[in-house]
Image 1 (tube, rainbow, N blue to C red):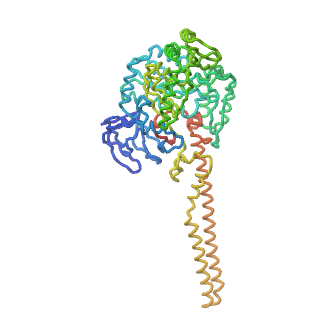
Image 2 (cartoon, rainbow, N blue to C red):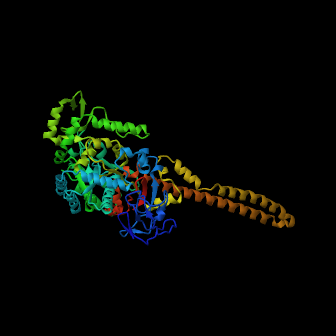
Image 3 (cartoon, one colour):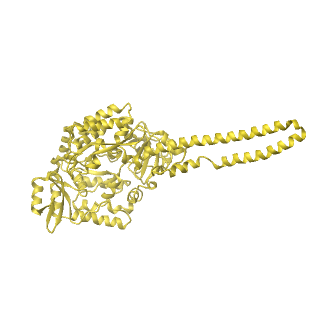
Length: 613
């Protein structure tokens, strides 16, 4: 009998070998806890793993290796951390992954329950987007020269039975932080799982939030230099406030930014290839968002990832009626989100968004994004007063002049795409919990929200250090030496000092007795007795010196290992996946890193992984 494990089948007879455990693991799994643990499937080789949702489970806070293979690939060693132990994980995220029932009223279903996936698929099949949207998506990919696998995947969106696994992000310079890559890979893997488990065509889609106006956030990135110091690389953008990312066109200065990146990165055998590919994506005359899309095409297009530029004017007519409904019932969307936020706050969670009363969930685009407010039956935007009829007519004739805000953007996305699941980061997941009523108000099925894979990429030496000295990963984050000092203090046992001191004291007493007693037998032996006593005292002193020297050497080594682990894991004091660009790791490992993460990055909601690659 075979079972699905990760992205492929596992046959009976394979044996789990984790921390000495050896069990064929042929019990039935009746209550699945994640996409990779499926109802009534056998999981040979993983009984000792407690039915993990991820391929290659290791007990919390420990490291191990698995002996089974998944489509011929061995699982990388790593450390699995329960996110409830990580101080930066907020309560809402913890409960979503570990106690979903507390948040069930605010989401479409738990990603850990098989029934939720069945319901989500049925909901999408009952309400399909316009098939012509697939042609629009495909046209974007063809214009960018996206890989054939991506174009084939986009064409499948025409089919009535195809669903989408969507994720998205702003168009960060050179691909943005590492978590952008994690999100995209999670979407690809989740789409594969849906196709295998539910026998349905599933297309991974990356929604580029090209109309975002936070240029400060997307104009730069950080990498680590040869000394593991964080270095900032940024693009100067001369644009008025509230300019959208889609309006930013690269000029010749991008070449200088690429040169700065080259200077910051430690040279490796992959540097030239990675930077040449970046230069091809981010070239003068291209828009910043085009560079981002081309870069994702380069990384994951061959794996079927469809990258969609949400600023495309041709997409707006498909959501014209949605925009008009928002204008026709002004303030309703904001109120629904505010009400949900108040309920979550009353339950002890936090409200991620706090919309102002009367805010309309649309922007007007006239060179910049202009918020729209409803006031006494009319509307105000950019200092102008606009009658409702005028706004409705503008939407009818020029829908491209309007853009959804953060509350309406997911609904627009899932109107255009047959979204069955959205791969979200922690902040996104929190605000999406305020939107279920908004989805219902616009008659759009809310997708399952799937937490993106979360991982820190470190070298094997760091994993060995953390395990050998039982260092809590979270203790690496604070920017002080408290954890290091505790570690150093543990390495010099007080018993050694006490033993040497006791030996010296005891030897001194006994040697004095010898010096006094020997001359009574033969006075000529007095000198020999004294020299022997002195030699023994010197040897004990030498031993003390060697112990002190060893402690100092150990202190130096431990300090270096601790600082290296901290620099890799929390550059600048922030979690690596948020604070270092993915391009840093591509420079270190080459483009093969993407394939390795596709094989080994666990889909494991509620846990953070330390992985060696």
